[in-house]
Amino acid sequence: MDLIQALILSIVEGVTEFLPVSSTGHLLLASDLLKISQTEFVKSFEIFIQLGAILAVVVLFWKKLIGGIGILKNIIAAFIPTAIIGFLLYDFIKAVLFENILITIAALFIGGILLIVIEKLPFFRHSREDGNPKIDSIEKLSLRQSFLIGVAQAVSVIPGTSRAAASVVGGMLVGASRKTAVEFSFLLAIPTIAAATFLDLVKSDFNFSSNEVLLSGVGFIGSFITALVVVKWFIKYVQTNNLFWFGVYRIILALVFLLLFYF
Image (cartoon, rainbow, N blue to C red):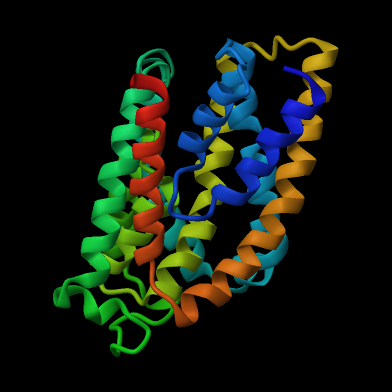
């Protein structure tokens, strides 16, 4: 991997981390297109640059993070399921799931269908901004509801699923407005991604060359700047729009890559 490739991957990460389109899936697919081999460092790099993206969330939402113990409790409750599954299945996730691009493509496709269904079925209208949602702020989420959102997020250990999509859908299923579900997904990313990065660094014994450290630094900065822009835009977007077209995008992307790699 060279500096240009590292910068491209960091931009892909910054754009896709908080959108319901799967940052991991896009990184795996982008790496394949750029002819970047999935070495142990590249796998670690793709996890590490997520820290830059979550720093953007910390910068934008720091007032919420320090403003209420209730929000912190909800974040912790939602983080628990992913922490347990991620720790127990770490080796399987990296050695098996990340090695099979067909899994990523399938997860992109299935996730796209689910987003379309959720936005179109009358049953889910309570989660729309014009549908009088039951929960219109993170503070109103109970610990049980937060935990269930965390269970939904845990599915995203499968590359291509999208942590953002899983947690947002989980939030809508427990009765949160789309905007509330999206904001909670942003905040939940902080412990989730930080823990994943720390675990990966520990597993790798911090064994990186000076060039790899430089590439990681470039990736961190690139994803941070990109995520700042995208998070601001997405918050405004969900206030007046739904997630239907993200579902369509996922399906099209899955089909395009299926044709590229298997036909």
